[in-house]
Image 1 (tube, rainbow, N blue to C red):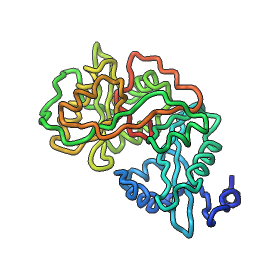
Image 2: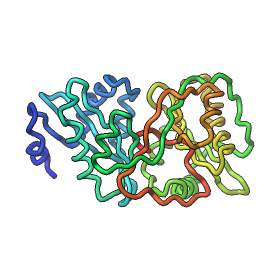
Image 3: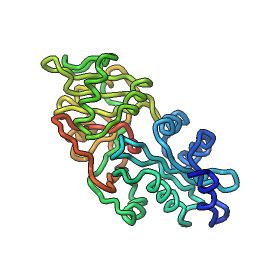
Length: 290
């Protein structure tokens, strides 16, 4: 759909115009996320736009709303970064952004992580809750000088295809572009057993410090070993990890100083991706990418 067509759809409320998300909107999007106290950097918005697509609402040349989505093959996607300026809330702008996003992304099945305030908007469009994500963050209370597992090592270029297979088995998604981008700007770790990669983790700059995720492993013990390897390299640094409420690592994260500071409800419109295991997801890259 052309920009002109989007404008025709969007001109009904105080001349707020719906536009495809472009690089020229990044500064405005950053201001919106700061208003909401979301800890995105300009670089985080830039990476998100490089990997996905979306829409903004502009009024008088000012960005007052954003929504983005990320395709994982032709059958699934994630959505996020759905923000409406505080002064513009309650006027249907969130609904307009979400409807544009769904028109663009469907017929893919779409997953998102919702705040409590956003759930009603998504439920009216057919999203159903399927889980809860806990946000853990802080500066670890103990120094992880080395990983306690001799199975974990730094990732190399030759590991990538094995990591792709692990990720696909754990998530059921085709996330090659995302993983390539995250590894380009971060550090990767592999857990190897019996000569085979059995788990991986990525640590990168994000928000207030670093985020560790994705973390994919067969057991909670293996997931902890991968996280410890990343923490050992970081030292005393601010770290965020987003993990499922059922992951079995939440209590351990609390004990090492990464407090649970919030949660989000995972919701899906369509069919969940068919993961096959035995590896599973212990931490996500962020709440938008899923």
